[in-house]
Length: 213
Image (cartoon, rainbow, N blue to C red; front, side):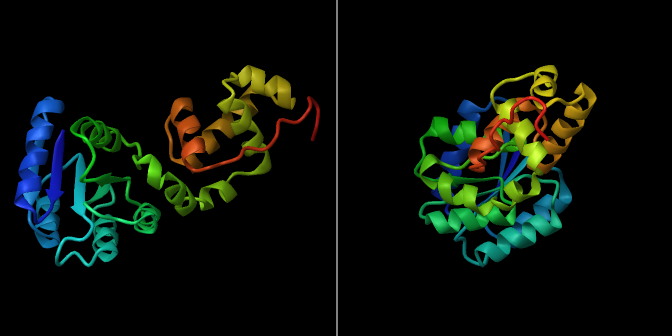
């Protein structure tokens, strides 16, 4: 896994390099000191994950996050900081960052979070999760009433056939609803959909009685 870190603190950069070498086998960390250098590196080669210090000099905070995501939309991006408020984390997630990494987190937590984000997931520490969920609240409105009903049953572990029986739908129709839910929540499978529903604070619609319209 190739990781790019843009951070102007050499001691932290070296600590993260050691952490990655010990905990993520076969990974490579490239360190640059500012946003311009990060963009040059991203333009020259492919990285599985880019990590930006939110308060790095010359980054202009959220403008740096916005510019990086706009220029390199296919590279998962996480922000990292030694001190960030819940509102700042929520704003970064709202802009499209895949996660927030506190520099004070343990080595094991940082290693796991890096792998989750690089694999297409999202990581936000529990203490920031409520604000981050609010930042992604528009996803809730994107689900139709029927999709919300299907999600409610999906979260309960029901199969497509069982969902169809409860909602009086053909199985092929259920499959189409599930596909739309995955697309709207930006997930690839049922497990990720369940996690996304919890992370986004979605409250799926109550399950109607069979035959209800």
